[in-house]
Image (tube, rainbow, N blue to C red; front, side, top):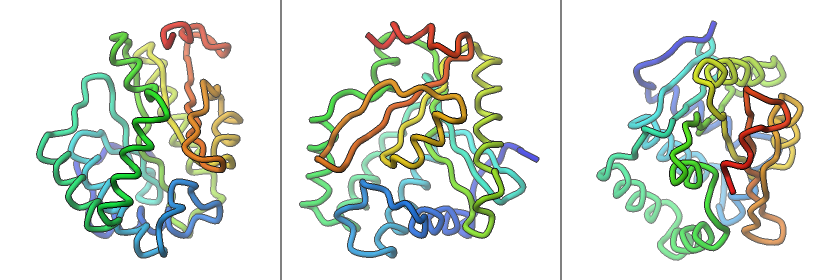
Length: 207
């Protein structure tokens, strides 16, 4: 059963981080990370930051989803914390490269929709604990998020840098909006689900 959580425990955050570091299709964005421990430290940090402004949902404490919307704002001190702690984990040079790459590849869907004042729900994190992989828990969370979008009559957006996940999301009803290329083999896939039309009637609001 999917329920809303007020917070995440340290143990839950560690399990989320482990699900990313052990995923069999490694994230292309982790190309500069030296080992699984570094990935886990980074995911633990970003998860702690996200829970300060996201709604948190859990499926029987086996899978987790964090979502934001057009009214969500990262608290300033949490943003400073993200920069400071990222520098300690990745090193100043790698963190600077990440910021530079992010500014070079163009605006995300979230930024575009905010500028257009278009309501949306943004899936910022999806994680299934390793022992429950293959149980279709992610599909259940996606279906729940789509029902939220239908209720609000708004777009549901997400992004991934994994080709395998992108294909899964398309299979689950999302459409690929665009690709943002960081490097030759590192691509951000921007996807959206429009509850009013499987063909994407709101797509023109990005332009």
